[in-house]
Amino acid sequence: MRYVRTFILPAVAAMCLHTGCSSSAPERRPDALPQVPSRASGESRQLMRPVATPVDSSETDSGAIAVAVRPFAPLPFNGVMLPLVSPDGRFIATQTGAPPTWPTILARPGAVQPREAGLRVFAISDDSLDPVRFDFADSDPLLLGRSCNRTGFLVESPRPGGERWIGFVEWVTGRLTWLTRDASVSAHATLLTLDGTDIAFTQRRFENNRTSLVIHQGGRSHTMPSPQSSWYTPFMSDDGATLCAFEVRDNGEMHVVAIDLTATPPVTIARATVARTDDPLMPWQATAAIQTPPPALPAIRTDNNRRGRGLFHHPARGRMCVFDTPSGTLIPLEPHSIAGAWNPAPASEGQVRGVFLTEPEGLSHQAMLWSSAEPVAPDATRAVRILADAFVPRLIDPVERTFLLIGPDPAQPTRQLQLTLMQAAPNDGWFRVSR
Image (cartoon, rainbow, N blue to C red; front, side, top):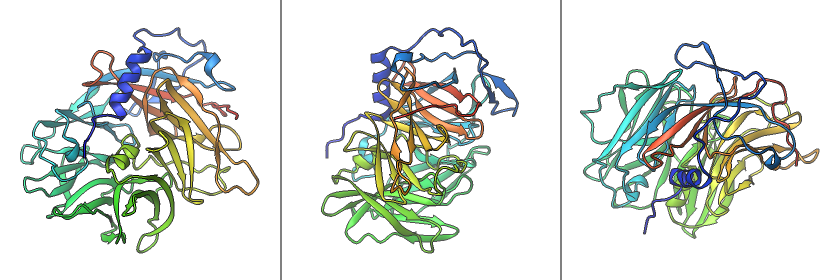
């Protein structure tokens, strides 16, 4: 297989350079700006001025949006792998050094130990990133994992003999605990909850290319049946009880599958066909820019008590997509969108939860609504442009509607990221969108 170094952050960097990154602050809004809670002290701080490029009002679709944004720190990274942001916004972990090979990233035959890879952790303070000194000298080189929660984050260790372990690093103490440590190739795990170390991951024997989906939950281990398929890149939906993953069957069909974690044992409850491919790069791309598990999202009274939606990038349609697991329906979002984060509140009265989207032209918001009295699945509205800079959003405070925006640093787009805080105005109906 020929691997091409491409997609999420290199694409965002190219977008930023193509559209022109803002180096000067636009004029301050006349209205009051919201308060953003301090991650370090618990006190409030004011975002003094919006500094990302505001979108031209002629490009928006019906109505207004009030947000405040403020960049506060650069962050090193390896040009390929997105950093992990704790769902409470207190810490961030990033991979530095030379990027691993694609077989290593994808946990495929030919993977090698990433000897030149580094791992750095920072505490997010009011105006800066404070390095957290962890000593991993006794461990082999570590790859940053795909998932984190309030307690810690996941790492992976490709071993000299070809096996691969999964570990959990605590944010506060730096203590490394191995969650898998055997002769298998275990990879691409997601944490299942916002606290603790329950995980779902893929696993294969070293001599076998077929991968299984293993769920470690509540002290029990369960392997999903897969006699004629391989599993890839599990991720959590928006309800905290539904696990999603990609299953590639021997006939070449790639499905996204929903699994009910409240059942004993976990059971498949929905599936949808995504593409015809057996390329493991496709499911990796589908989940490379999502937040798993997402922060705890409040219930929405207009949501018809239907939860369990998975957010991922559709590799065939080239856009972000919502997997509505109650109906088994795929809801395509804006064309060319490459990353997204859940909106913790409905866009406006009567609507379903929406998504903040990274597009080539900037950051947008797209809501969903019920189109009939007895809906099968919600429909997506037209997206509303928010900022003219392309950011990857990370929700860090659902109550205060606060996001950490990750974008390329114009000075070093392949080696350094720019972090920006965004908070939506606290008034009711802070989005007004229509079809």
